[in-house]
Length: 51
Image (cartoon, rainbow, N blue to C red):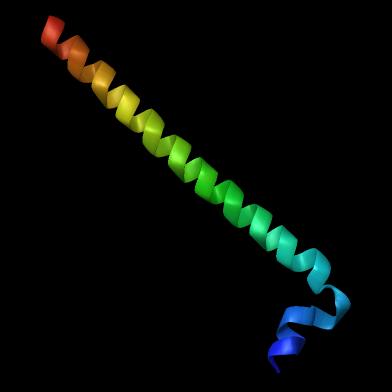
């Protein structure tokens, strides 16, 4: 049964890398968004301190 899930009717070699690529892209977007938000918060804090 598990091998049928992995094989996906012969298309598993195409489907699983696509899932992996999509998961990687979403993870990368999450990390870059968090980094950008932290940078923006630091800039905002710095701007508020100078006023």
